Image (tube, rainbow, N blue to C red; front, side):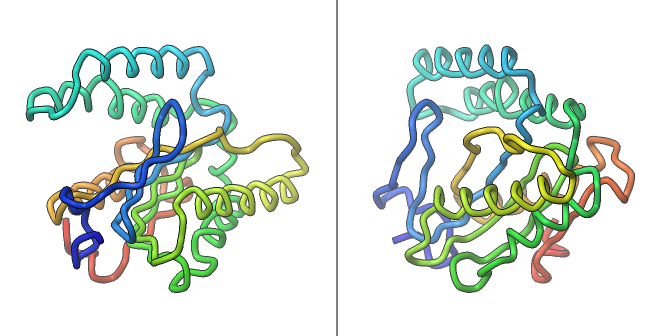
Length: 212
């Protein structure tokens, strides 16, 4: 089981699934998720990033000390986030109606399958802090969110084809400080990307409003 507060328990098994960029789930622990539109990062750039990351991890086996973790964040997550925040691609989610479809998907079955803690819907990607409830599989929930929202956005805009890039990135939340940093990241993402107020949708659970 995860900790009583929904944090990662390092002494309990972790369910790992997927290939290339594996996904982790531990019961109903909090998860920080990111997924993006299909054209938000050029395919060649993302392929090079993935290969670099794979080589780096092979040369730096866990456990990692603080300096190694900081190096990893700068080389991979932070570099990818900078690409996303640069606003490449068609940015279909800049339209409020399209963001509303994503929010509707996120809120569907809330309280039955998952508990939202915060999310931000950016012009070309989405960040979500969520706790999955018992019996809910991470990959199933993300697939439902992406499938339903893609269908509605395509209907709204008259477009066809893939809306979302395959896959997603996820991190299990380790403790209260990690949760605070995830919340801060979500809340500051529009500012870092220099977005106008009508270009994003931000929501934070009431008890977390003053947490940062």
